[in-house]
Length: 255
Image 1 (tube, rainbow, N blue to C red):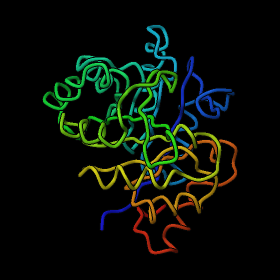
Image 2: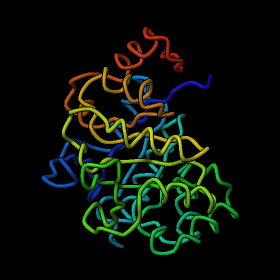
Image 3: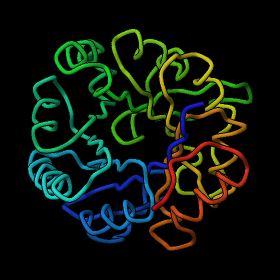
Image 4: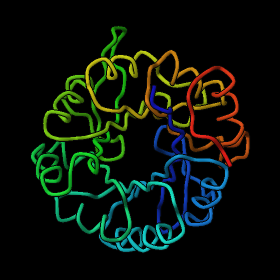
């Protein structure tokens, strides 16, 4: 069985890491380079930088942050936010990213996934999906523009479409759970995992190390994305991995 991954997400705005709830009420939590290197020392398997503004000026800042971080990291770095074309993917990779996350642009033009995969390989292309539950049934709607714009896409079907267009990984965020620290949306995670044959990274709702264990075990996710509980020092990557190992889940050892 492949090792499960603990992925740390850093939402970046104006060169600083911020954190909010359900994509709003943002607060400053620190310097992205310092936080990324700290989490690597603690045992993080990957770092994700998400540019939540994705304006032209902020993209230049983000690329500089990515470059400075990549110079110090020995674990994979994923860069997302404002990626609109295969040329943008090329630029992100040139500045040190190992993978690139694409969200709104893929919804507008799914071919961007295929074009990026053809040029750089599916292993570099992450389809980021922000999903919100609708009604009582197990149905989730895809949202874009940082969770502000509702689409007509069903999240599970959209995940299948993204993989068919070349995405090598799904970054799946529950808008309902984001920042709430009430646990991941296990039903959403299981539905997408069952629908695709690529790794799924579950995001949104981590409130404890036990929540991470639950989404990897009961939710069948390949990786869990964690942010706020680490920024606020409620737990550490090391503590999360110790719990995972104690329950029998395979994880990369922390040195």
